[in-house]
Image (tube, rainbow, N blue to C red; front, side, top):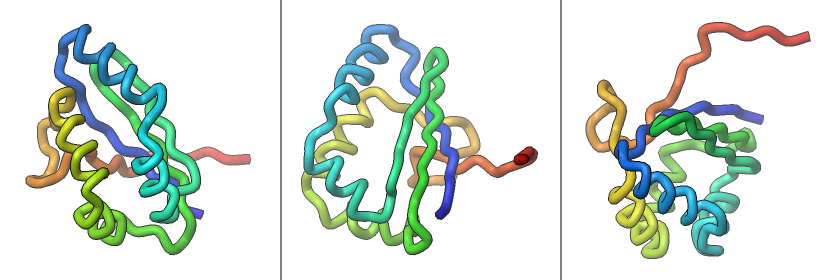
Length: 111
């Protein structure tokens, strides 16, 4: 199993944030299918103010490159991503062409 933590900001507008959350109350089945078929087994998004944190738990075969390739060929995913651009803004320092930025583990404590 693999675990990833990613960050992204929303536009700092309370109405847009409400709309974004409403869209995520029930995502289209095509989007759910694309997530699960990529090897992602669990995805959660958390919000504080306009900052989002996403946790992905994926199988060992999952890769962001493969997911990106699959997404680029899926019209439903492309439409969803275009819609989401109305609400999202990248965090300073995000690589060109990326939206979500991958966090690096700096501390871990397990029993």
